[in-house]
Picture (cartoon, rainbow, N blue to C red):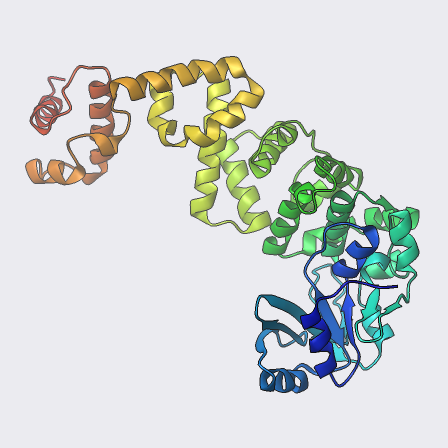
Length: 411
């Protein structure tokens, strides 16, 4: 069975003192007759030994992870990830990261650390030979996703494998073997042990899984439904097991769409508190990013609650480019109402931002040094409202006069 490889890769294989194998997605995708992915290589060769040989022959070497014996090999416009054969030992929780890694000289031992049969097919480049220790070729032809051995053993210490399973189902439109699905459900609690960064990365890949290979447009919904079927959302810290998907299926920004669906399913008492806690605890987002996401969601919900135009655009004028596409998928009537006023603001150059006032905190401090600095923001917001309503001209002279009136108790 022939797996297509480049001339450069054939030359690379000849430099290895042991047989060089392609393993994982590239071999799998060739068997499925779909677009090929990055090439992952492995062999019974230590990375230090092969790095020295390859550098002498003009290759660039970059250590990707010394603990896992993994390097990036590149020459010209081609690059490959190479890993020495190894065995992984996991902790009792489902955190994904091995606590210990050992080199091995046996391909079968290396294969045992992998997850699904279709990802555990090796191709010997030099000998043009398939090595298939877990019958992944048959599963690939039948489009079945199956754990390499006992699903309990494969999934019990690695929650990320469950999310990867969900993603692969959507990417390749596969069926899950019965026992694999059963134990994924039983071991779903391990998702809670994944690091926040890995958890978000896998969720984002699931949301856009149909974009990877152009084979399964819209198939991300299949993966999202699988998350519900496995009751995984409770291990994302949510008080519900199932999310009702609506917006995520309609909008281009699927992360925001999913967050709206989560909020609609959970119905939190305070949107800001819920979003801050969820995004920080589950995904480790920065405070700045959380605040930006909250603004988008608050702008969406406040529009649905028909916030008054002036108040709305004082808060969300700079963010309507993100908010309006979300709003349009929920209520075109409400979106068009706000869009009309937005265009009116642009057409007549109305001032809706404190930053556009011809006065600043520094001007107030210079002219009124005895004012408590905590009142600066309140003064500027008042002036903005007066300018917007046409009661005060947006010029420093008139704005300072208005401050005089306020401080003298006339306003």
